[in-house]
Image (tube, rainbow, N blue to C red; front, side, top):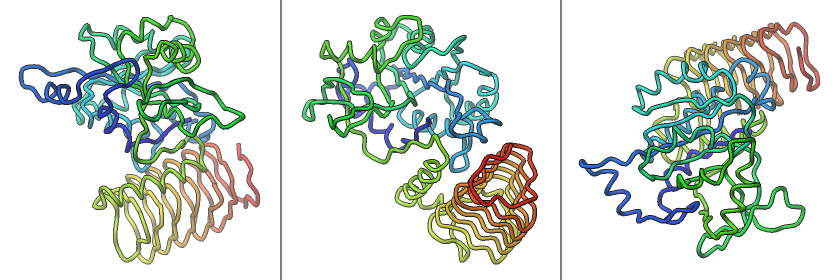
Length: 369
């Protein structure tokens, strides 16, 4: 699973009691801006999943590097953390950390934020990575740090007045509440003392102990929240994200006679004449959309080419793929990297692995290997 909650992080620090800490927010803000002392805020993002539900896209790139609204998913999180004062991001990852770091190197300089990795030698669950990364998270200052944990959520039973958490309930069969664990935590370094260096769950083992000691608090985050870990939810999440841009940063959206609704087009993409694009479309860097193309509710990733009079809806076109002339792509068709759909082909829900050529129609949802 991967989550989109870009509206939420800027509000987290406004809560005075959150996960075993209590501090004066006004003093916190003033100390952040003080020339004499700069509080160092750190964040840990758990990125160890394999992204199986987002295949075939994750066959080419680790899930956090899959594009969403024309930038890697992980970059949305890093930018949001930077916006609330985080200075250093630690990525807890269990394979190929060099791929992640090399990709993010340019963004590290651009955003002026330190990005490092803590590598697991075995899957460590949702709490184990915190213990493994202790040396990167604890610097002796005692300042809290963020955790962004994208795992399956449970229901949080809490006191609506004080925010005190009573318990977590995983996948309840009976109604116990309508507040879920969105996977964003602000932890006191002392919480690390409660976590053993072994595969362990922060929701099932660590938090229940803190809640039993009445030291766990929660807040209801404003904004929107969406699981985008599988294609259908990815497309829905794109709609929500673009709608959010419309309300908060409308200048980032593309406008014009050929645009309908919310559309995001990278400045390096080329759009031909007579196209109709939107609503809810993202067109990535270096893409070429030839004349007469119709796009709606879809993502066209970096370097893709859509030839004349093709029609794409409710689908994802992977990196450097090509859609032929008069082709029709619809119903959650997912093209992996470097897939080439021939002219006049129809695909209805096809999931196509990377580096394939599609010469015949896909009449019903199926996987093309």
